[in-house]
Image 1 (cartoon, rainbow, N blue to C red):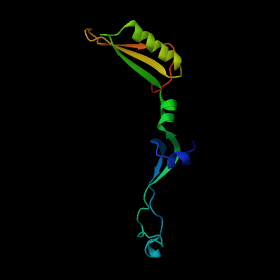
Image 2: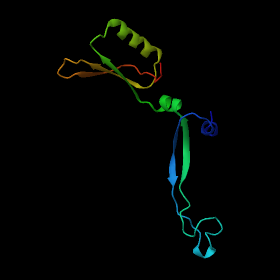
Image 3: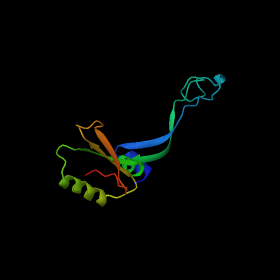
Image 4: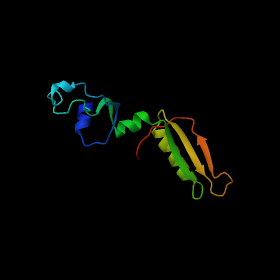
Length: 124
């Protein structure tokens, strides 16, 4: 979908660009703002100079760098770990995968494990 189509849609967007807040250059001797409807020397308002328009789906796919998984050890079993492994294998990608293993009774209650292969951010 092109930028114009995205802007016309009801889809949430991320818009990148710069704000142009330059002052009006009209001369005071030109009457009421040189015929532009503004008083002489008045600010012409800010403009957003758009350089990129992305849908939130594109943002998630293109800009996500890491995927975090938070697992709590009480109640954690082999079936859940196998299920997580299958999901991660199905959605391999370029993102770094990090598992936060929460052990409530430990001195350091959260253990961070980096995953050797990348994953892809998806909503399941």
